[in-house]
Image (cartoon, rainbow, N blue to C red; front, side, top):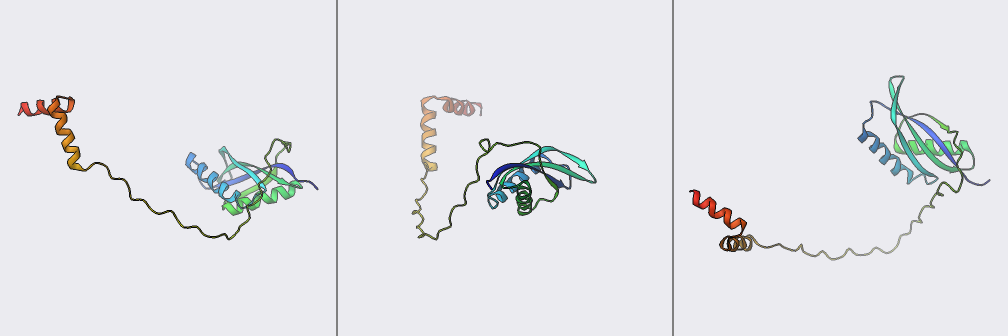
Length: 159
């Protein structure tokens, strides 16, 4: 059987009303977990959260490549377990996806133990002008009558 894309909806449970930062953190956790479950090509939380049975439920739409819808739902459940997100239910959405509309999952890169390269030599940080050089430049500007010098002369004349 050939792999096909399925859109799976997961109802993620949250203890409190999620803020924008909470949703961003959830998205980051899902992206980190998605690196481990390569068949899931996208996982997007859909605000707003809905209050149901003493918890807030945030709908998350995931796209997974699998042979069957049940297999895709299992992949999404595994993704949510990897991310540490409690999930109330996982089900297939009614939306049909064409294989050309969804990017194929990337094959995981082979882990080779190549030769370790040395880090480049550290170059000392470039130093700016010394304090004495800056003071000399400001002193010259004061003698030319520039703005800094003019304000310095005015301040001197008030005393």
